[in-house]
Image 1 (cartoon, helix red, strand yellow):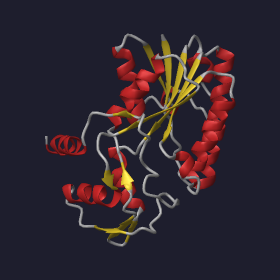
Image 2 (cartoon, rainbow, N blue to C red):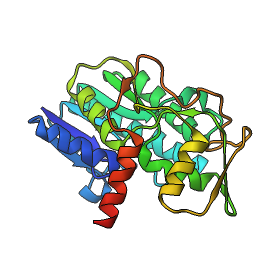
Image 3 (cartoon, rainbow, N blue to C red):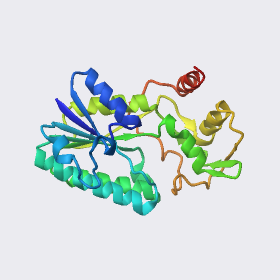
Length: 253
């Protein structure tokens, strides 16, 4: 099976490529550095020739509201048009748990727009909603930082390792389209402020973390369960402390 992975050289995409190849598939990474640009359409007809499945795990280079909306609208439209011309039979996209509950965020509005384009397309699809990755905890901390203080809402979060997310995306890619959404989350729930506090402590980062119920998350107000998946979600295997230990083992090796 030929599977083209848009964003296939990035954090999730590179892992998906390896997993699909290990299963015996022809997994083709596609990104600007491989000559494929979904914003301009460059390289799409060539890379999609003979493709059975397209997996889109690409992300916007800018999180500014207008830029990110333009990225997901334009790239998804170009991709779906090219897929239809190439006869692709399954479109898989990676999105975010709680997208519909986070519409105050410009980034999440862009993801909602992406999902609507996929749902309205003639191409059978599967959308994977993932919780936040362990690998992006630093970004959450940075986004909530003013001076030497990080303010975060003390709500539940169920983060997952990028490795587990990639495993689920690869599984979905070789299954029949569901024309709906599947969710994946990590094996543990934390309070958002406590998770970031533990991460920063492990990094010996001097910033202090304050639990602030009014703190926004990428511009959106959070409720208790905004960031956690439902009870039917696939649960990853990698625990936070194990992932954290592995990160520091690699850093000191």
